[in-house]
Amino acid sequence: MKWDGGDLIKTGEIVWWNNFSCVGRIAKIIETEKSLSEWGLHEPGVFICWNLHGESMPCNIFYPRSSFFDNEIKPLSISELNSLEASIKKEALKPSCEKFEVTATPIQCNNSNILWKIKTC
Image (cartoon, rainbow, N blue to C red; front, side, top):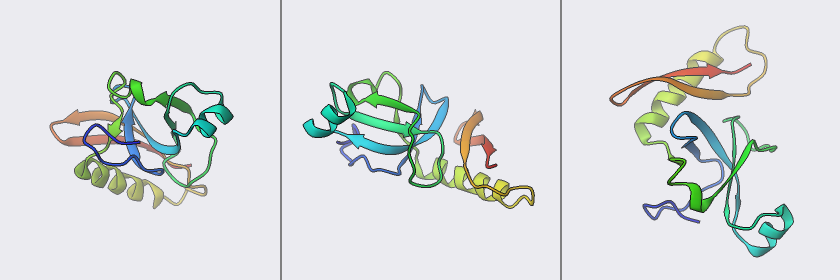
């Protein structure tokens, strides 16, 4: 399965979804007839998880490939990823953080600068 630009969609990739209001991780790609049947789905797509850290399921939501445009599902740019990673590292250094589950929500966007709300514990 590929993005509109032709790049392959990869498990673990960090993406915008829900009309740029959420960031998630591609947890599972469903595209073979066998996978579609096993999951009870009718068209190829991806499961997106809110937890950005790790490889675990469960997933939070399934989006068919045909809905990517309408839901503005696409990978984060390099600068967006760098901004997100810096915010996650800053939050994870707090002494009160015992668990490492990361969810991120963009709360303010000015040009290419994003202010992230990060939850790590």
